Image (cartoon, rainbow, N blue to C red; front, top):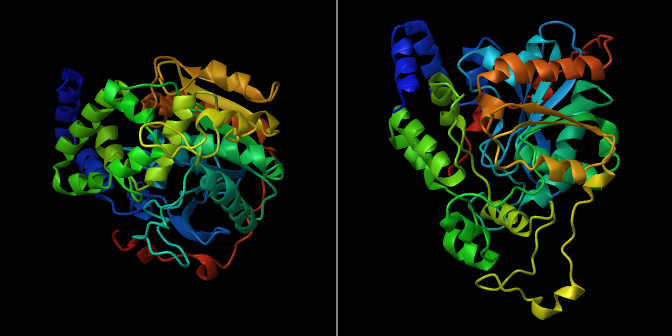
Length: 416
């Protein structure tokens, strides 16, 4: 264990109150529980998608008049808790936005902890997990935006997406012209359209493998399902160490600027369910390296071969037309983030619509959990909003929350 980490642990032992708070956040069962530890109140809602999925989303209201509406969306294998699972409110982008006067909503993808419900499909069925980035872009993001605007009684909102949360928004905005009117500004944290190939040789081999081989290896339902088991049986310190080790082996992430306290709170809420098909979709995108495209159903051969074969000239997988986006875009990235290719992003987004903000020495997870979230990243976002969103305060109209609020018991979905 690194010396700085040992020092941080000793400092926590010397501060019982801070240690207690970190433990409460780490052990919190739900998004609402984490908010209460930090002194905030949240409300839960359900969004119905056109294809029958029920998405659990959350809202945190400012104490005074609101300045605008902000929608935060998580990355791959995550849920909305990543935005609030921090040692202090100042370390959370969500809480900083609330304190600055914004009405903050937090979305969840189908299949994760808060969205494992379908009107007709059981969550242990193969049909339930037959989704990927396409469904996030075509259904989940537009449905969530429409619901938020309806409940908030707002004409538009600012969307902030981390990692895959940015990718699925790029895709959604590119094929839903009307969505560009509803999302006045899109802030992409750790943004990506086509991540460069990365990781050890075995991971690169998986990235290049065919879907049929990957389905044979991982199944057709949940990816990395055993992670939840290990999280439940391992001591928190050991689990945090395992996550650090895994991130280093798979992604070469050192997470030097993520404090031990942040790891203890954040890592315990890091993983959430998604489909094997979603990961397979990402592998296709990385292997091609040409941008974000729809799932390629033609790749059915066992070791990378395709049913298209030599007739590939007669079939082209559809790429999302990201240059058609008309919303204003801000790319916030770390220059040590190996999942971000900023030159590729700028070349494949509309000219004149994109701003960039570089965080020196930062990797992927540091964009939401690093020490500079408090002093650099969140203040930059708030400054952007103050210039972008009308300074006129919008009077918040109270709604009958009892009619639409989903009780916290809804969090206790049946295990797969």
